[in-house]
Length: 127
Image (tube, rainbow, N blue to C red):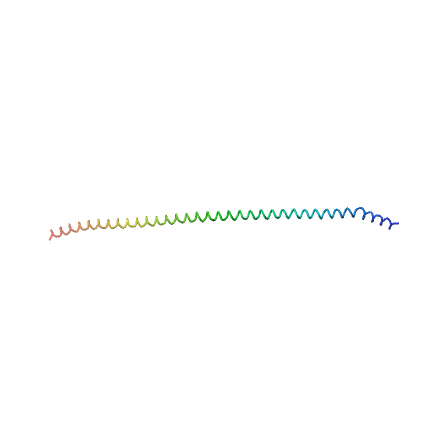
C-alpha cells in the first residue's frame, strides 16, 4: 500500500508539476534568448558610440595639433624676425660706438696736435 501511495504521489507530481516545470524551462530559455538579443543590441550601440567618440576625439586632436603647429610656426617666425631686428640694432649700436670712438680719438689727436704745436713753439723760443 505504501508503494501504491508513493506511485500515486509520484504520478501526480509528474502529471501536475512536470508540465509546469517544462513550461517554466521553455519560458526561461525564451527570456534568456530575449535578454541575449537585447544585450547584443546594447553592445552594438555601445560599440557604435565608442567608434563615434573615438573619431570625434581623433578629429579634435588633429585639429588641435594643426592649430598648435600653426601657432608654433607663427611664434617661430616672429622670434626669427625679432632676432634679426635685434641683431641689426646691435650692429648699428656697435657701428655707432665705433664711430664715436673714432671721433673721440680724432678729437684727442687734434688736442694733442694743437698742444704739440704749442710745445714746439715754446721749445723753439727757449732755445
